[in-house]
Amino acid sequence: MACLPDEYVTLRTCPDVNAANLLRSVLEGSGIHALIPHESFSSNFPHLVAGSGGARILVRAVDMERAAEILRETEPAGVLETSRLTLRRLTEEDAPFILRLLNEPSFIEFIGDRGVRTVDDARRYLRAGPLASYEQHGFGLYLVELREGEAPIGICGLLKRDRLEHPDIGFSLLPEYWSQGYAMEAASAVMEYARESLGLGRLLAITSPHNERSGRLLARLGFAFERNIRMSADGEELKLFGAG
Image (cartoon, rainbow, N blue to C red; front, side, top):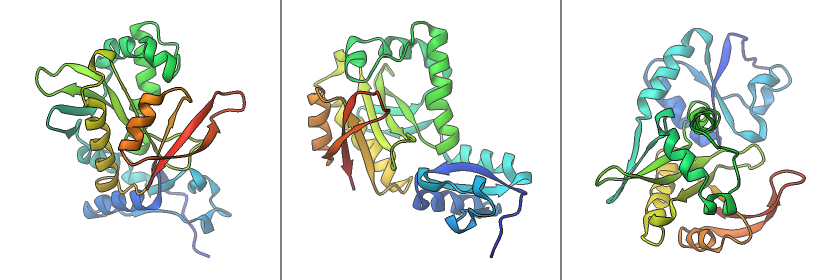
């Protein structure tokens, strides 16, 4: 019976209704009316309903620019700090480091070859991946830096894939920083951030079948193996883990 007027547009797609409600409260606290449409609206406005991929936050078109700015202000570049690490949003200036990380033999073996061969390729990867995710979902992969000296050592964060119902955690460090507790420290901080700040009750993780190191780390983080999946019809079979 109720309808969503055409003047409403999608501001962001959140992983679930709880996460959307958190952001709606931020917006309405700043005087911007926001809606989270239910599936019952789909017959009249199917383009405004997210379906299984998440929950959309709608604002009036005239409020779009201000609403986006409010959300950006609530999501500072320095996202997380631990006793030894800082996790911050990636920028295009991080392209040289991303070029190195994505071409590490361990990254290609356990995660995949992203076809990033130049700094310009790395910039395109950043724009299409982490930077786009920040805008669309409010989270993404973050650069992991040592607090002492600010040396970048890897990436860790959250991804929202179309084929997975919930966000999944991802991490990759340069080999020289393995076996020092950094991955556990970064991933634990991301999980706490996901639950306490983003309102995400359930997280997933995927690994290649032979990536036993990541599997052991996921177990320590509270993840349990659930099943084998493929992200595409002709893709490699992967292990799916869940927590929460």
